Amino acid sequence: MKLNKALLTGIALTILGGTAAQADNVMRWAGAKDIYSLDPYSYGDSYTIAFLNHVYEGLVRYDENLEIEPALATEWEIVSPSLWRFKLREGVTFHDGAEFTADDVLASLARVSHETSPLRGNLPAYKSATKIDDHTIEIELSGPYPLLLNDLTNIHIFDDSWMKANNSELPTDVSAQVEGFATFNANGTGPFKLESRVPDSSTVLLKNAEWWDEPRHNLDRIEFTPITSAPTRVAALLSGEIDLVDEAPVQDLGRLSASPGIQVLERANLRTIMAGFNRKEKLADGRDNPFNDLRVRQAFELALDKDLIQKRVMRGKSRNAGTIIAPEIPGYDAALDQFPAADPAQAQKLLKEAGHEGLPFVLTCTTDAYVNEEEMCNAMVSMLTRAGFKPTLDIGPQAVQTPKRSGGQADVYLVGWANEPMLDSYSILVQMVESKSGTAGVFNWGGWSYPQVDALIRQASTEMDRDKRLALQTEALKAVKDELILVPLHQQPMAWAMSDKVEDVAQLADNKVRHWLTRMK
Image (cartoon, rainbow, N blue to C red; front, side, top):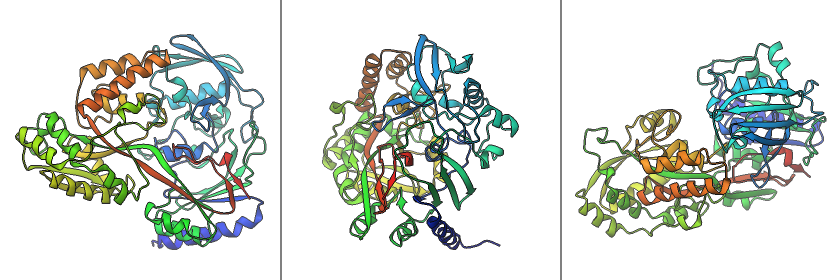
């Protein structure tokens, strides 16, 4: 027998509401989806990994300016271009009371880099690790690699003894439906420890009174409830059943802001939404590919009125983009962040010059990936039609559309990239721009290839001087813009809504909740 999901959600909220009075400061937090697992190595989902940062920690972390700072490692040095030494923090204990030592780091690195680990790609240059003493380790890389610290921000450290005692030395895998003790249990060093979890219903965390860091938060308890329905999340906030929603619908922000006792925080986030083109010799229907002609891609960009999309579709909440990374991402150059005004007449002229007047193609979009994507894609179809294209909209859920995009079956498609967890422009360049080969170009769904751009990206991958590296990456970003490999649209909006019981939260551009920085009144 299947129970109504809304009813179950209501029951969960009632239960959570009933427990709130039993603790001093309780954060009742509602998300648009549940986390996939309590095992941070089980799936490359940024929301899940961000949630588990409350329980687990890495050797380093991002501060409130998204700069790297010490966490379980206090200092580090580059011994040679391919060898890094880390000094580990002393006096740290796991939630079960076990001491944190080098053995835990080595076991965690072995687990996340195992051939069955879904997150092994998050440590692309990792080769091995060696224990020097109980609080010193060395990490050997496959060669010079400047972004190891960025990668380590989301490599959570497990207790070696806990893993061995619970037969959890190998990673689990959500996609392959491989579960284990770590799927449903947790033991980290972080600011909160797990009290209970009921998948798709609630996950409860308690304050870790033994946390090594000086807490800024004043929370005793976090009660997380996934509520997939946007109207239900809003109703729960307005009724006082929850305290914070980390994905408030753009169309409801005016009503929420005007509601007594409700605060709204909003900004553009790091995720840039872009149009990508099929660049193979033939389209899926067998036609010669017109999008290999730069004039067609230029006509596509000129057809789009980004200002109108920003005003009407995004309710003025997005940030128009002229380059494929947000301003907060290293490698950004304001000079590249410019874009032409919409010019349907010039677009038609370019199409005619290219011999593609009335060009028919399919625009592939999803219903559940990006903010107001369905409305945006409909607006794009209208704009492209006025500029002389003949677009057909193919829209559906990610599960249906992603195989079309990744398999080269889409003529033109929307895609978003936030450069997480690396928070560096090398992320999008190596994953989306570089020609597909080995671990490079995994998300180069269009199949384009620019050898001169590949050379810049590869040179940056081993350049240890940060300024020189970023200069190479900026040069590659300029080539992306000049060739319109991808057409950036905007950084999508993010909005959190909360009750006036919340005194302070840290809303950073990466859109990750950090309740170790939250205070309740």
